[in-house]
Length: 156
Image (cartoon, rainbow, N blue to C red; front, side):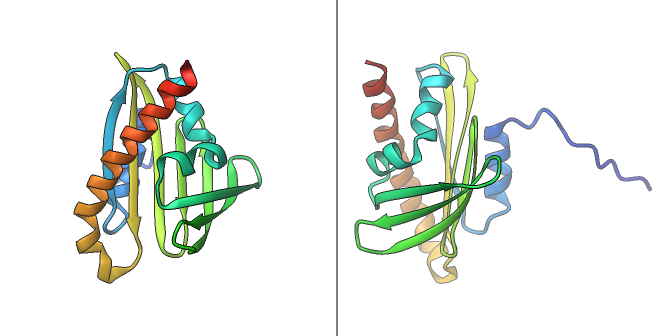
């Protein structure tokens, strides 16, 4: 039996985020349509150093070091004093960051009425995964509220 190994070009960034989340134990995805053009939404998402600490409350600062192509390294300092190093991929419509203890993802695609934004994340600590999922859903919904507010503020 032959197996078709062709890549499906129809897999947009948000669909890819769903696949990555499904393959990541304990990963949660929250999506929202933001009534703004893709370029305005992605300008907030791609400004990791300037914007991520504004909508992600546990991050005090994030410092990014460019790598090759769309790869980069990031160091996050948390408000509680914890520090995490992330390997990341950042390209238009796609951000996926992984540390030893957590996963962070954003994806966006233009849709009728604005931009569909997906936020994914998980803890890599096995004992916390079951407890964390419902908390992450609520936290990500609030995070997307703040993200959407940042899009509106920057557009003014």
